[in-house]
Image 1 (cartoon, rainbow, N blue to C red):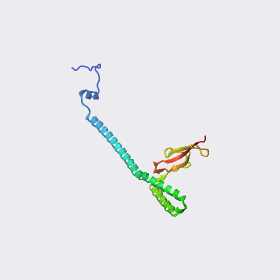
Image 2 (spheres, helix red, strand yellow):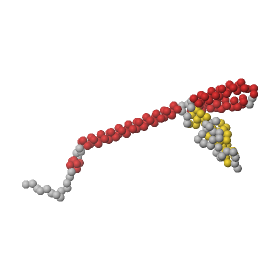
Image 3 (cartoon, rainbow, N blue to C red):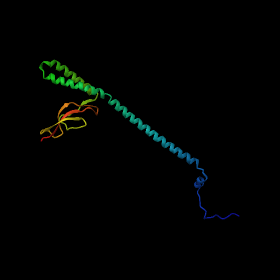
Image 4 (spheres, rainbow, N blue to C red):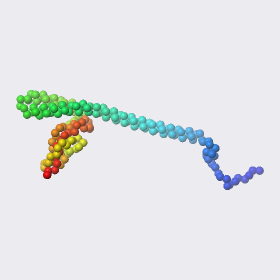
Length: 175
């Protein structure tokens, strides 16, 4: 005869029986591994796309600013040509030479402009430490404080980067 069921005995589920016996459902284990592999693959794909975007951005910047050293080397030439024009304008005998030097200056400015190098506008503008370098402050009753009164040396930008800041004299409040 069989014994009656003991209601005091602990009840176990099928999953608990498998865990106790040390066996795991192979389908569930394979599904978990597949989900994990899919997640890793998606993360690796996203990381690869981020690396590609970063490299593309770095290469674009590298191409965009490749002329920076050349422009920096040409700026003293531009300055000297401007000084030659200024000096020749003061001498009436140098009119023929002056015209030639002005043409060279215009040509050089045109070449710089074609390569996205532009002069930083400073005169009469508010002082901006990102594009101006203050070399002197002068009291001024005519201009508000921190306004560029005079440009000692022109500044230039290649695209949006400063190649050389404009050296300026800035106003301060009159005493």
